[in-house]
Length: 507
Image (cartoon, rainbow, N blue to C red; front, side, top):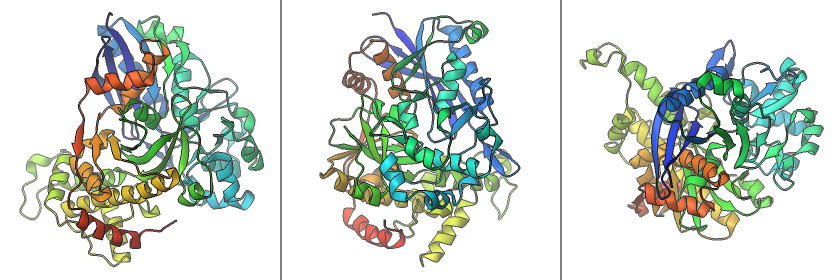
């Protein structure tokens, strides 16, 4: 067959990429055509996404690829979850979409539970309770009498907004809709009784479409602007984790998957949502997957903590020379992850631990100071150096993975034989090894670009280039390498786990 080209726009919380995938009938090659920053914008007391800038970056990436590749079969967009846009009756954007770390949702879960019981919310939605969820963002707007909500005509998640601007079609894709805590996974529709009880307008929620839906061709105005015709826009799994799980070449269904990036999500694929007393107790989530499946999982604060530490250190790293160290060549430089991980490898093992999911670490700020605060509060040695702090974060993440893996296995009623780890975090080989050590489980890592590949595979499936998801995963397995990590020092990690459980809030 002639080579077919697909474009995956993969937008994460730190950056976005335009990825060009070429399929020759046997293998996929993947090239990064463009990378762009995704930087939130603070306006007075609010934190927003720059939606128009992101869409312009999407157009720029498409234009760049179109200059050299005319035979583009389709494109798809995936993004993070929970955040949304509101459109007016004229389909104009009603304000800049809020960032999930905006402070307006602080205390909002408690306000919701004053009106409806916590158990009712979980029974309706089966979603992990997190104050960043769309439900609490919407309720905050309702309590504040926000004009945008009052005048809203259409609710769209972030990838749905970009799909609308690409095609003129308004719909919410299933996998991203399930992250909102406004969706009933049993009924596979919006959780209308919950929304009505909270007096959130239900008429704004559009139809829900399945992953792999062909939305149509690029809007004529956009196609003419870019100079490219007949490109189809497909909704893949529009939630980035949904695409990542689709793109992970899992050996079988007896495998846990672990998406590692700004957030970590540990889970397993299930045929039906698991909404019961145990999943409510453990605060697990049931989010949509491809092929009518669900992702039973748990969000864990991921490399966000280290990202914030790195931002703090980078300011000092580029500062003038102090304490005899020559920083003259470091002006305007950026401290690399490789450098801090190298320092962590030389730091003392398993000395100081944190709960990555503590509220202290949710919002932007001076993370090294907050880590020191947590360790002081829990009567531990306070890590001082970059290496000690980095090791503390990575070891704590690995131990939290073990904590949630035990609960996942309890919900499934079986032991999972392996962890398949994917996402940008697998470039941190120290974290991969710590995960194997802490869980005493073999960890297979790869591919790094599982999200973009899952996005592409769903496009290929929608256009009948492949017959099944299984076939797509086999092609990915043949096209990209993975690496396996065997557990080490398990006795020492067992001891650390005992200490770790004493410093976290057990459900």
